[in-house]
Amino acid sequence: MKKQKRDLQHRAYIRGYRAGMAGRSKGLSDQFSGHARPDWLAGWREGREDMWSGFTSVEGTHKAATLLN
Image (cartoon, rainbow, N blue to C red; front, side, top):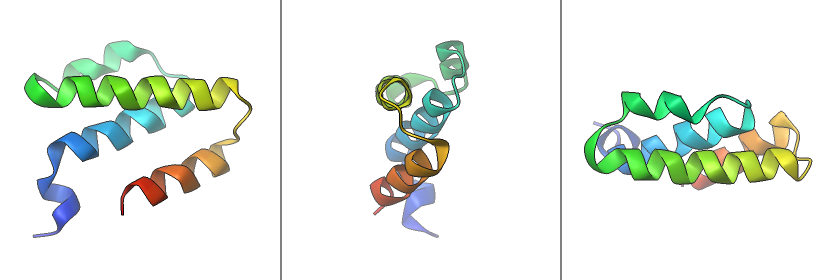
């Protein structure tokens, strides 16, 4: 099994970051419950900050890809 599938907190952070970059609502964090929800929200906040700072979706995707390693 791949490491990225096992690490739920990191995966939640990446998904939250992508949702933030896409301008989606933080209400989507309900799909992650328990210990992964704060990580999703942290990723969402960082994604929103990057979006407001002028990052394009390509730059955000590149940043999210580097966070996977």
